[in-house]
Image (cartoon, rainbow, N blue to C red; front, side, top):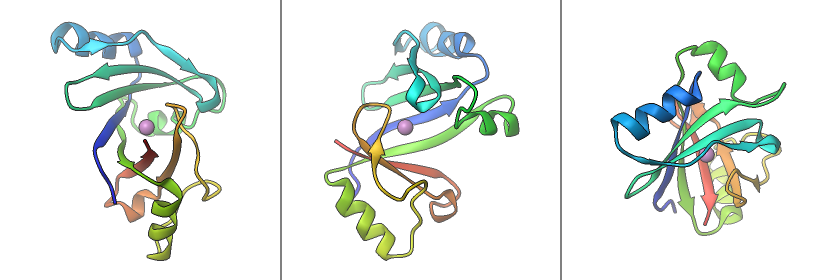
Length: 134
Ligand code: CO
């Protein structure tokens, strides 16, 4: 069902410092910060040869990552994203095994403009898992 690792997302308290780590110390190719108001985050994309790292910082009043940052003031890994061919089929198949899909339970348009679902971390070995249809 799942395919490539699309990205690993990390919430960071300081986007400039985090970008500097990846660009200046690790020598990675990084994007400029991108505001995603619909998702309540500002993102810097770190392009690695085989996947991406997404550095996330809260944007606006009701950011979905603010709570994470409150609990983890130094930041940390937030979720991993695996690619799937058919998001509805994947979500239906996983739900039929008892896995919980966050939010409405239906795919929504994710940060890359593609359909995504998030699986409950308690069903994912303690890790928030995003599935993205590519
Ligand atoms: Co993501």
